[in-house]
Each structure stands twice: as C-alpha cells, then as structure tokens.
Image 1 (tube, helix red, strand yellow):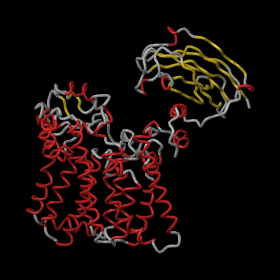
Image 2 (image 1 turned 60 degrees about the vertical axis):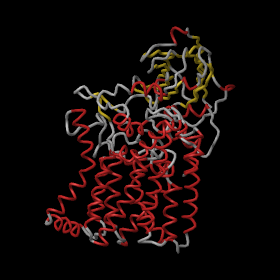
Image 3 (image 1 turned 90 degrees about the vertical axis):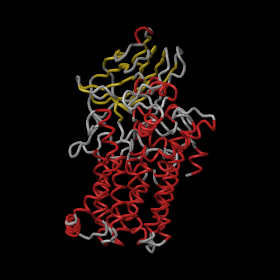
Image 4 (image 1 turned 45 degrees about the vertical axis):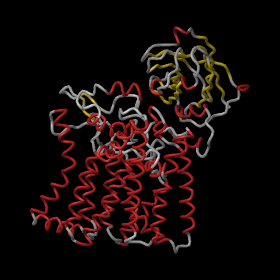
Length: 565
C-alpha cells in the first residue's frame, strides 16, 4: 500500500481531477481552508480562484446556495476532523518547502495522502488485535490478506485513500476493539469511548449511526438479551446521559456550522439525492451491475454469503450483532438513489464495513481448512487477488476502467487486456459485442454528403439523417465526423443514434458518441458503426444526430449498407 501510494500512482503528484484533493475529497476537506486559511465559510469568495487554479472537479458541487443566500457544504465535516492534524502540519511546512500556503498546493496534497495511509495502518492494527481474540494468527493473516489484496479496500486504503472509507474502516476496527473490551471487562469507560467514536463516525457519514447495533448486540445470543441490556442501562440515568453527551460531541460541530451558515440547526445538504426504501431499491444492481456491482469488482466478497450462513447455523460468537449489521448495511447502501456512488470501483460505500464482515469470514475460513476442496477456495482467492490488481491498474494507469459507463459488452471484451483500443470505446455506447460485416455481400442503401452548416448543429438540437424502410439483417454505418472544437466531457458529446421502429414505438436503439473519434479540430475522421436488427418486428429505421452539449460537431458524410448474411 505504501508502494502504491508513493511510487505506483502518487495522487498527490497528480493535478486537477486526479489530485488527492479532488472530487468528493475536496468536499470533505473544504472546511479546513475555509476556516483556517481564508476565514470564509459563508460566501466562499475565495473558492472561484482555487477552482480555476487547481480544478478539483468539473463542477462546484461541493457546496450549494441555501435559500438564506449563503453557501452550504454538501458533505459533513467528520473527515476534516481527521484530516486536521495533517492539514496543520502541511500548513506549517508550506513556507519551509516553498509551497503556496493556500491549502491546495502539493504539500497539502501529500500530507492528506499520508493521513490516509496512517489511518489505514491504525485500522489494520486494531482489526488484527480484535480478531486474534477469536481465531489464531494464521486465520487472521488469511482474513486480512483477503480483505487487503482481494477486494477494493486496497485501492480505497491507499491510492484513493483520502476518501471517507479508509477513515471509517479504521473507525470500525477501533470500535470493535472498544466494544469487545467493554463486554469483557464491564468497565463503563470503554462504553463511553465507544459512544464518542460512534458520534465521530456519524459525523463522517450519518448512516454510520447503524454502528450502534454493534454496541447493543455484541456477544448477545437473542433479541431478548439485547432488550434486557437496554432496560438495564435505562435504569442508570447518569450512565445514559454521559453516553449521549459523549456521542453528541462531534455531531454538535456540524449543527453549529449549519446554524452559522444557514440559520438552521439541521440542513439536508444532499438536496435532490435520497433513498428508495422499497420501490426502486438497487440490491441487484449494487451486487452485480457492470457499472459498480460489489461482486463484479470484488468477487472475493461473495464468500460473505456462506460465511453468514455458517455463523448463524453454528451460532458463532457475536453472530447476531454482525449478521443484523451486515444486512442493514447492504440495505442502506443499495437504497441510496445514487447507488453507483459516482462510478466507484465496486461499491466503495461498503469498504468501511469490511472489519465487521471479516468476523463471519474468518470463522468460515477456519472451518474449511480441513475440507478436501479447500484448494478450490485458495484458487478462487488467488484469482480474486490477480483480478483486483488488474482492475486497480486499469482504474489508474491502465485506463480501461470506465466506472458508471461500463456495460456488459465493454466489460467482457476488455477483461484482462492491457491495450487501450479506441474502437473499444464504441462498446461503451452500443453495449453490443463487435459484429463482423462482409462488404462484398452487402447492399448500399444510402450515400449522402451533408453541409457543415447542417450537420454541425447547436445545443440540444436534433438532425435526422435517414428515416425509411430497410430489410432485416446486419447494418453498417460508415460516417465522416467533424468538429470545430474538441469535446472532452463525455456527457456533452454529440450522439449518432440508430432506432428500429414499429410505427412510432422504438424496438431497438443503438447510440455512439461521435466525439470519441474526433481527436483533431476541423479534420474529418471516418468511423464505422455495425449493428444487428432486432428479433422483434419493425417497419422503419431512423438515424439521427443529437447534440446535448454546445460544441459544434456532426456528420459530413454517411453511407448506409445492409447485409442479410
């Protein structure tokens, strides 16, 4: 992890949206420069200059304008609390190393990356300490090896470690250690510290309030036992008040910030984003989607299913606590409407819960070491490790990882490859595997030249290139594309769309973003798009160009051929 962070892909050396302090991290971090450097958390008049200099994201989504007129940060300040010692160290070192003391120069990027590794190390140490109380060192080593090397934790604990997940991973590892100490010693101090830590984790991500399940249910074997514990605590008012007070220490910081900037004690800062609790729940997509499926990108974690079953059947230690916690974790994670979490490397929102998941995993692994087919398990884990590192490489230096744009065709066509092929980019749009087309056996349907003034259309406009009858079979579009200015934003690229219609009802649609092929301005570039007619009946084909952005680009020539081979 040290090598990955400092030598393989040092994000602190990268710039713009690839830097350590970029995208969501810049949203977690923004409290620190706003308060301690620019002394402006309401108007953020300093932020425009920072954005134009460092370009941490393509839009200023880290804050929004509150009806009261002030800017309000989207993310809570919990991660900033953990960044803080490293931020102050960077600020003290900035004049010494000749870096600009603006909160975003290379020394700040470096120290935030160091902070991620620091908390990752602390988390792994405490996770090992707690696991050693229940299984031997060999099994602990295997369990940690699975989590670190065979899952997306490696990426979110090192290269992309400045995200909130590695900090919460550390928090859960320490929390489990504290809770176990409480139930072993019955000393209230461990309970109180646990409540304070839960408060900090809730400040980082409010949904981490579910960690209270671990505090209430640890070492319990029934719901009745948990209920009796709670009733026993309620009989001790001073105990409850101290626990609640310690819990609210950290969340109070956020309440004060909201009151200061928005004039309200509680602000829902995610605005239009929310949860779909029943209808629209994303459990299947969250597990198996090519966009960000947990098991698609970290297949090793499929072992959580036999591990949970084994623990419940055998009634292993703490089975009630971690089973209820994991089920609720999966439900909450996949109930979030933005279930891809920004195109993460396989459900990053679950990474922080791996310490809890590791308990049933090590119990199950311990039970299968004497089984005849244990080598099948070893082989599966080895494959998962190789796959994980290939995926991490593609997400950073390889360039094949495409996050939320990934689909079935692109995923399987590029799996375990290393060469970037521009033609593969088409699969991200068409979601069709490459189709062969024999020009000698084809029949021409259309060969038309278009004037630049017609094909290079304006924003949010549509231009129909063909609308008519066509026989079933393979279809090939050979086109010349041209742009007056390169378009880098994939969502603003012009789309060439093929629609098979039955009446006015689309039967099949295929789309390609033509700007993928246009790497030089004002130079015509040829490209082909081949597709297969649908199995369902259709009576019309429509080909049109749609420009969702503002860049003038389009088709200057279009040839249409069909083949029934």
